[in-house]
Image 1 (tube, rainbow, N blue to C red):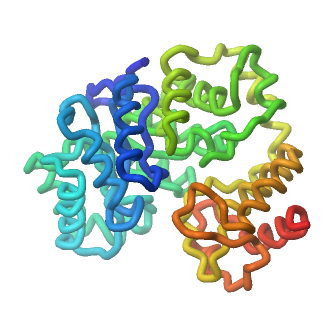
Image 2: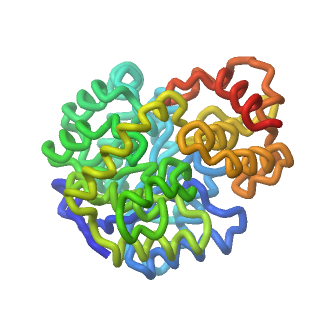
Length: 371
């Protein structure tokens, strides 16, 4: 496993880290797959208070690192539910309890920070920033970071605040919107943690077209991971792994495959330029649009639509969609419904970080894939 220095902190982090957003439902299995990743060289696990009910992801991470705490860097995030210093501190203390640790290594002071939200609801007297500084002074937090889906322009401004030592940002083969932000963060001495390196699972599918670009590529996820970590400004790619097989495959790529050559990176970029239409319907399966009050599995439906519209894999897209109809999506704790259950209430669209026209896409998916 390659290890890279995390900005000015001097900490050496594995180029592949474990994203604990999509852990399997069985607790013992969730712990086992994280521990297997640690055995194979991963030394960072990223989680958040809002991942899973009642802080489940953090609790599972705490179990996974028990007995090996000094070998693992924990990254987590504080959601800005309300705007008081006391509330922010209460959530931090709950996270320390969930994780069963005395300190957190890399801490996003606001989960999915927006510049206006930071300026209006976090940095002022009586708000979270003053408590965050106290917590760092007390040794409860080692390094300040932020995560964001903001506009690239505002992410640049967030970087320039000079408050942080690291940044968590989305970046993958299908979404290069923050590429300049990543370079700017690197130049500013921040460590860059990449979320969604496999595009929320969308690049987990077989794509003969993508794989054919690089000779010897065994799978699309392999290419996706290698592409992300080939950017020297990226410290680590946080891959959300939910099975032991994914852990073994991703660690094998990080350990054995190496970086893409400059010529290979150019070849991939040229192919992606041909698929710009993907940006109009791109969904990362972040689940911020969920839950749908009608039970529609919005991320699953839009994922199936991408398979059809962008890659032309009609049979696979219809297969995925049919499983949504039957409530058989194995990554969901609850049964979800297909697009025809949508009543166009519109509650989902304001929550979408990508600003997608979700209702229109659900209609299109129903028409294309529902027959």
